[in-house]
Structures are given as C-alpha cells and as structure tokens.
Length: 112
Length: 116
Image (cartoon, rainbow over all chains, first blue to last red; front, top):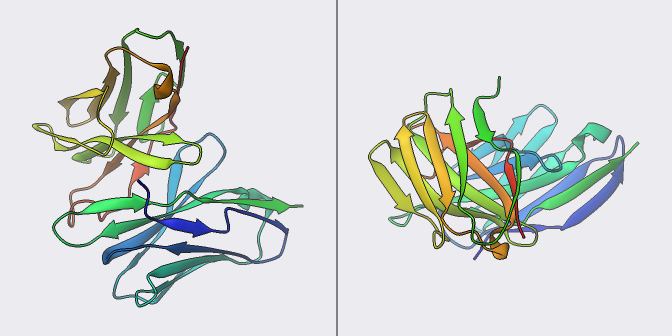
C-alpha cells in the first residue's frame, strides 16, 4: 500500500500565482524526490532533497523538508499554464528494507 | 530519441492472452524497474533488476514475469492477461551510484494496456 500522502489531491490556480503541494511520509528516509507527470505521459524527476537538507531550489521550484514532522512541500512560484500536471512525491526509505514509497499525487491545474 | 523507450505504447487484448511489454534504454544504467499506475492507487513496483543476472519481485509481482535480456533491455510479460491488469505500465531506470532505491528514476512514456 502507498504510505506517502500528498495534499491537496487537486489544486486549481491562476497563472502567475504560487502553488504549494505537501507530502507526508511515515518512516525514516534517505531522501525525498518530487516528480511531475503530464497527462498520460511518463514521470519526470524534478528535485531530490536529502534527509540532512532542509531546503532546495531549482528554478521556480522550492522544496522544503521537515524530518521532525515527516513532511515535505513543493512550491512552484509564478506558475504558468505549462505547469499543469500531476506532481508526485517519492520517499526513499532508510534502513535495511530500502524502498521508494510513492504518494498518490496532487493534480495541479493552472488556468491562463 | 527517448532515453527509455517502451513498446507498445497502447495495447488492447483479451482475457487469457499472453502479452509482452518491452523496454530499452540508452542511458547505460544497470538498474531497471517495472511499475504499474492505477487511478487512486498510485505507482506500484512490479519487478526490478539491478544488473543482468539480478531479478527481484516488487510489491505486486503475481501474474507477471520479467526477463532482463541485456543491460539495456527489460521486458515484462503477462502470461495470461486478466481485466484487473488493465493499467498504465512504466519502465524506469536509475544509475548504480548510491544505495538501492535512493537515486533519481528515469521513466519511459508508458504502455497503456487494456484487457477485455
């Protein structure tokens, strides 16, 4: 079963606004990754944040990680219609039973 | 050309038929994976392979088998397809740097399978 959880499940904003998506996980992790999926297409890796990092930036993306709360957030600033997609978090579980645990995704619609 | 190529992209078949989904990659990665994606269930790992002689079951391997024919090729077979195997299937690769399941995944475009 999937242990990662994103919220909200769906988000609709206007172009130019910021979009924030959250991800929670349940076990200790090595890192947490965010992926993007355009409708019916393959997933594309956006950013990876390690367990000893608190914040990471890539272009208009900002990811934070709070290991005490077992949560991460993805912020997309100045959103564009082309950002319309589903966004997934995947937490790389630490320990002997290594596994990548996927969330169910946030569907983002950016309206022009 | 795509780094991870899946064929076929779409397939409609009938219950009981044997189906093979193929994946080839030009990234030079040792690690390859097969996932299925279902609405509301997210991505689930079917099988994975960390080199040519290594095959491992994932979360939902029942009803599936795989073959790692070469470093660049990893195929998924459904020996006798059933309707609840209707899903979007993804092949993915990752490099061998770092611990297992910690690296970035590179996905193919997916194979949409419908079993009637």
